[in-house]
Amino acid sequence: MNVLSSWFKRNFNNPQIVILISMLILLFAVIIFLGKPLAPFLSSVVLAYLLESVIVRLQVLKIPRIIAVIIVFLLFVTLLMFLIFWVVPVLITQVSQLVQQLPTYLSTGLEFVKQLPDKYPAIISTEQAASLTTTITTELTQMGQSVLSKTVSSVFNVISIGIFLILTPILVFFMLKDKQVLMNWFSRFIPRDSKLTLSIWGEVDEQIGNYVRGKVMEIFIVGLVTYILFILFDLEYSILLATLTGFSVLIPYIGAALVTIPIALVSFFQFGWSGDFAWLIISYGVIQLLDGNVLVPWLFSEVNNLHPVAIIVAVLFFGGIWGFWGVFFAIPLATMVNAIINAWPKKLESE
Image (cartoon, rainbow, N blue to C red):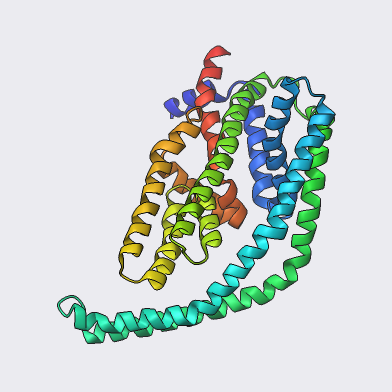
């Protein structure tokens, strides 16, 4: 008991530490309880944070901030329009085509399963193949009903999506344009005796900034290289599968494993057990290996690496309390926590 009491006094007797912990608790409370309604605002903060680094680089070139903000914002809106009016329609078309092809894929897959006892009698029996066929059919039927119900309910979210797409650019523009005004307003609510919090935030800010910029580059590079690979093999739904592959890097390990399943299935149904199928999967595996062992270390050399266990726990925890957005922001939040933990002891020693 004395050991616990001594540790508590040593680490929490400083008022600045209490301020830091209070602000962290408030931050996580906002994310947990207000994450969904504040999704446009939080997304705008992330986008503004990302674009701010470009504005700073333009200011280094002696470009006035307001001009730099306008240039960067116009480029951002142009990219957003490109995504909305070209990429998204193509993705929707390919998703629709894939859904229409599902019965054919199902029939081909079931036929393949039925032939397994004849090809590999020592591994699978006729009864096992029949049971597997029944199970697959039942699961896919239930999955189809679930997707249909979600599709019908999602129609009612069109207005919410429209509001999201309108509000986000507006919020991003004013966050960039009035950054100093907003920072001054926010600083009024920070206690004066909070040097520890501001000092640790400096290190956290650097870590998160490096992470966000590196992750955007990784998404673009992996998605583009994968798209080129799929085009070379003339793979169906190439844009859809390349987009999924690019965004899969947001969830290390788990994302790559999940996105490999549809890629392998589409490749199998298109090429069968052929050389094209083998070379495509091998090439895709090489891209994943290069991403994990070359690209990631290069892009994130200045970011404290998270242990795979920490990444999985972060995805499960934040995904469980915040759904999709929890999964999306899991690694940045884990990076922030990791940076605080690494900076805390050093700041305590300097106090």
